[in-house]
Structure formats: C-alpha cells, structure tokens
Length: 560
Image (tube, rainbow, N blue to C red; front, top):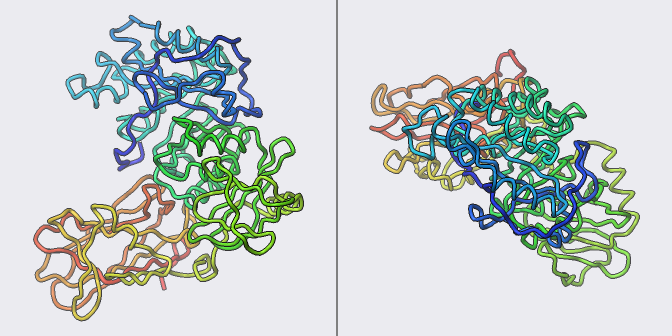
C-alpha cells in the first residue's frame, strides 16, 4: 500500500445470504458502459448487513437500480482448504437475478487457515492477504467457474483502508492479477473492479492505471470525508488528468453518513462516473436516482463564486440541481411557468418571493424540474469551454500567487493556507498562546495535540505531480535548551504521506525560521490535509509556532 494509510473505513458491504426478491427472468449482462437505468447500484439487506436495502422488483424499479452488490467472503465460503459452502451464495445470486439486476460479486476476507498470522485477532487475520497466493487462486478459480456469466463484475476487496485490507500494494496487485486471469477464463465479458483507499487518493489511482491497468476495467472511489467542493476538484482532476484512456471506468461508493449524498451523486454523474453504489435507499438518494438514473449531463450554469448549478437531461426532461458552499443566495434559474422546486428529500419546496427568474438556494441542494429551455443551451456551451470547476471569488484565487501563508493564533490570519478548521482533529487541537507579545500556537503533548495541520488552497496547488517544488517556511519560538524541541513535516507526496528530516529548534530567545524544500508534493488532500508540522517527539517542552508560508518555485530552481 502507499505508506501511512489510516485505519478509518470499516467493512461495510454485505455477506452473502438470501434476501427478499420476487421471481423474474435473469437479465442480460454486458461489459459495455452503463445503459439508462444502470447508473446506480445498491448494497442489499441481510442478517450480516441489516442497514442495507431489502430489494424487491418494485424497489429496483422505483430507484432505477441496475446493479446489486453481494459479498463473497472467502472465510465464510471456505472454512477449510478445498471445502466450499456455496448454498447461501447460490441463493443470493438466484434472487438477484430475479430482480433483473446485474450482480457485482465482492471478493473479500481470508480464512484463518490461509492467513499470514492465524494466531492474531480475527479482525487482523481475516483482513490479511493469503500466505500463499496459490490458495487464493484456487478459491478464485472455483468461484468464477461456478458463477460464470451470472456475475457481471468482480470487485477485489471493499476498500484498501487498513480496516478492510492489511496488505501491501504488491499483495493487492498479485491478488487482482489472479482474479483477472480467472475471470477471463470463465467469462471474458465480465468486468474486474479494483478497490482504492478511502477518500480520493489520486496518486494511487494514477499508479494503478499506469502500472496495472491491464488487470482491471474499473476502479472504485470512496469520497469519505470530502466536502462537495473537494469531491468536485478530485473527480475533475481524475477525469481530465489521470483517466486518459477510454477503456477504464470510474465507479464510486457513497454512504449517507459521509454527508452530502445528493451533491456526491450529481457530481459523480457530471464527472463521468459510470456507476455509483449506495448502501441504502433513503429519500435523498432515491430523489437523486429519480433525476440522475439514465440522465445525460448537459453542463454547468455559471452563477458566481460558491454556487454550483448542474444541468441534466433525462429523456428530454431537463432538471437543474443547485446548492451553495455557504449562505443561501438568490440564484438566476428562469423556469417555464412557476418554478417547480423539489428538496433533496423529494418534497415540493415553497419558493420564497423574489426577483423574477431567481430561486433561493442554500447548502441543502434543490432540484428545479422545469428550467427554461434556454438554460440547456447555456449549460451545453459552458461544458464545451472546459472542465467542470466551482467559480472562485477573486479574493480567494491563489492560482497566480507565488506563495500562501498563515499567521497563527486564536484566530488565524490565513491567505491561501488554512489551519483553523483542522483544529477540530483531536491530534490537531493546538493551543492559542501569546509569546513575546505575538499571537501563536503551541502543541500540547499532554493531550497528544502534537500536529499543526494545514491545507493548501486548491487554486494554488493540487495534485502537483512533480510540476513544482514547494519551500515551506516555519517560524518557531526558540527552545529553552538545545535539542529539547524539534519538529519535521509530514506531507502528502506522490508516494504516500512522508516525513522530512527532523529539525531541532535552536536554543535561545525570540523567533527562528526553518525551511523545508518538498520536491514530490501531491497536495490533493488525500487524508483531508496537505501537510502537518509534527511535534510528536517533543515530550519535555512543547513546540510554539507563529507563522507558516509555502512558496512555489520551479522544479530545481532556487527559492527567492
């Protein structure tokens, strides 16, 4: 795996077991791009996953659902080497076919007899790669031969967070390669789906597509912990800079408790995500499916900074979904007749009186279902002009700046470099102080608040991928004695989060500055932040920091 990936995302997918379906014919299946009605899929209820969806044909029709995902847990199916218990999975496959849905079979789990460390706790050995790849190959061969064309896609592991998979990238690629070979023998038309770490790990996606793209057809993304604006930038970057071939598909798994399900669903369709999977059909997801399943993305409507308005067309019926990044605003969306507005939960919305042709839009998305036809042409023209991006207030556009900075204190003075909102992280709950008459912050080893986290504005740097070097300057208060206080930077690189060399803070009075040059920055906020000042090694005296800046310089050029 890429180094230093956190244990954050627990296994959330269902174990193979019967669930409620009515009888119907087995549907046709194909590896071609999603047809109308095939955009969305669901996880299904079972004794092991009671929060999933109990999918009957009427439920499937209601949501426009074309795909269901079923777990094939190796540990459950093969309690001993060479002995398989197929009955529950047989029933699940039959009942999924009765609902006229395509099946994604999720291969996960490791039996104790095949694990690397069978004496470890079950939460560990069941998530490890097998000790012998040959055991995995035997299982994969048996299951692909048994179900063949009844399975439209085979996903390998639910995600690559450590809570789901406790192996390395090399382990995972070896397992993926085995699945590709077995699926090709059993049904060459079936898809192989690779997993990815939670959040948007753009360097990982690029690495998999570049080095191992022949072993899979789609890669699953997990926008956990991402606000809509962050998801938009990540998806747009993948769509325009990373996924450069027509053969591979982007798939996405979303959860309602990650927040903003409607925004994520709409952004996924707008940015070319072929299929989206949701664990349950609550009103916001059902409403999104109503307008997006089988819909064509037309383009954006530029309504100014902090406003997103996206036009979709479903069978000649256009609809706009709109939201803001902050306070409610009056947004120009002319309609045919009185505005027909639907809330995220699918209820008709009362339109507040206002200027003709405007609708009040806030952070909670709304659907405008009768937009003026001229808006369709406007959106199409906007789409032809370039990638989808949220309009930025010029005062917060740092794309042409040489540097960004933050003066730290009780309330930071931030210019394209942000720390304040990251103090909600337990390890980032640094303490505002005043030292030598200056506002500053200090770490607190007693509470393990030993990191000063930062996000670099996305207009300044995002998925840098070797285009620039970055010089980070940290202004810290001198220590009371030599080699008593020190720090380094932990930063988002193109090969995972990495540390710079340790820097001791000079002894003495007053302030000192220290610089670090980063030549391999990613800065796509893989864990939700770009870099952190790490004071975890300071146990006798806390680190005090007054200011931080990040200067962008040409690769290899001297800083200025």
